[in-house]
Length: 227
Image 1 (cartoon, helix red, strand yellow):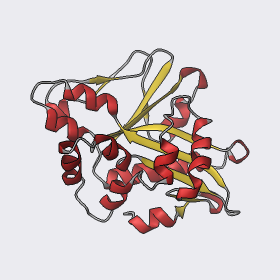
Image 2 (image 1 turned 60 degrees about the vertical axis):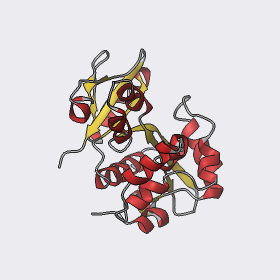
Image 3 (image 1 turned 90 degrees about the vertical axis):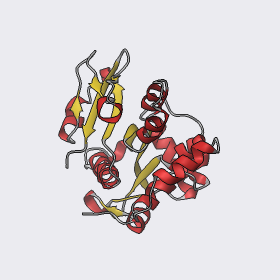
Image 4 (image 1 turned 180 degrees about the vertical axis):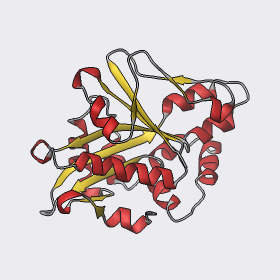
């Protein structure tokens, strides 16, 4: 099923009457509060960016067929890559039948891939392209009393559908190894790496191997786009 922009704004069906949708400006603090429960690595700028309607705007436009490369190149030329990163950041929330937010997800452009590729001489354009091919799942959170209902899986499913429709190549993320979430992400279609293992994300983009993996105490998971 191809997603439409208005569907993502209004809400897509999830389990038990839950709707998966784009957060509204007034829900920014609540959505970020949910996400903070899932990760300690959440920058303070996400709540105001969501509240001001800056997050995900290009991704939503991409669902209508808009070209994402053109505004990205313009933003880079004007020195506005920070604004571009916000426009390529995807926040989703899960709303239950009572109207309460019971889950949230956040994905961001991969700063690691961008910075690594940008250091390669002559690959500046490839570095920009990487923000339209690789995205990092920053956090997936479900309110404690709503867990076990498939809400996290539904958030991930809608996230994957959206990025694949926009022709991204890979979604990836990390979790604290002690949380033992490997089997969960495997069930959602992701590959979970063993500690110390890496995956090459550079050869397809640049012809030069670039290995991506988790840091100490973290476990890396990823899912590639197979057509």
